[in-house]
Amino acid sequence: MNIPTKHGLRRVLARLMTAGVVTLAVVAAMSSSAGIQGSGFRSLLAIGTVTERGNGNSNTIVVSGIPYSTSGAVFQVNGHAGVQGQIHVGDVVSLIATDPTDGGAASATQVTFNGSVQGKVSGIDAPSSTLFVLGQTVHVTSQTVFGSNIKPADLSGLQNDDVVQVSGFANSVGEMVATRIEAKGQSNVSRVVGSVQTLDRTQHTFYVNSLKIDYGNAKVEAVLTDGAPVIAHGVKFATDGALIATRVRASATTHSEPGSIGRIQGIITSYSSSAYFEVNGQPVVVGAQTKLNLPVPIGMDVEVNVTGTFDTNGVLVADSVQSSK
Image 1 (cartoon, rainbow, N blue to C red):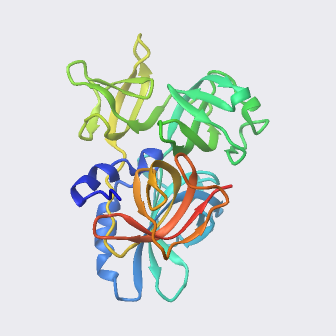
Image 2 (image 1 turned 90 degrees about the vertical axis):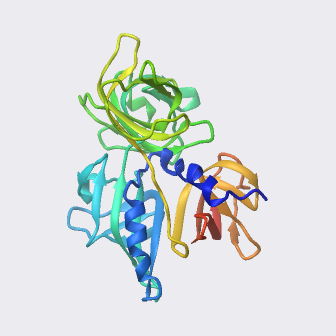
Image 3 (image 1 turned 180 degrees about the horizontal axis):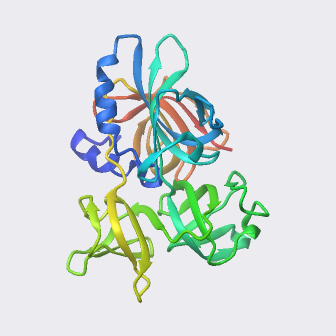
């Protein structure tokens, strides 16, 4: 079984949130919580879809079916300070929390949401339940939630040039499987999350799937290399269709303390065997003691929920694995 070394794992973990969730503060937050180990609490990192959101006065959010207290949480929405009311059912979020060992509800300290792509719809293929936004292929499923401002609440409620924000998970080829689609009215903000491809340092360009990014005049807050996960923002396009980025930032720098809890929902993006695979780029090891609930056999591009404990290399040692129907 080929399990990454700690050195090699840094590259793997850097892809963890190319799915559209950003955990830029995970390093500091998870490390600072290391001291709580043995004091009745464990640190926890959860990534998944919001299945219930509280109203403006709620102090609870439900992610992948599990409730978390948000009374002391800081919210980050698309790179800015936010509030809980900006997060909706179907949004993919990352959540840092402390989990009491006595079985009580975990308390979130940080909840982060970043849309996977925002921009104009450039094409809709209804027979294949697919739409195209900023050069990104977006697949719609029976589980995709449509915002209340899209009527009817399906692909027929959209048309070319509508501005939408998509939240979801990237599959093994970088295409998006949407968990939520929301109309953004007349917004001129374009944003895409993905991996740098075909980097040209001379022309100051790269691609995210088929979208060309011109970062020549952008504020760059990332180390640009092919394969690096980034978020690119812009409001204008060049004559060749390239997004003229105003800001490019890293989309993930994740690390979890050994012994901390991981609850990861996502798509299997690399599959070596049923004993070792990656979910959104996060390495997962399955052992003899792992509880399996697999209505769909696990394999490439299968959506799963994995709960476990991070080891010293950042690998998630699974206590349970469940595949989605």
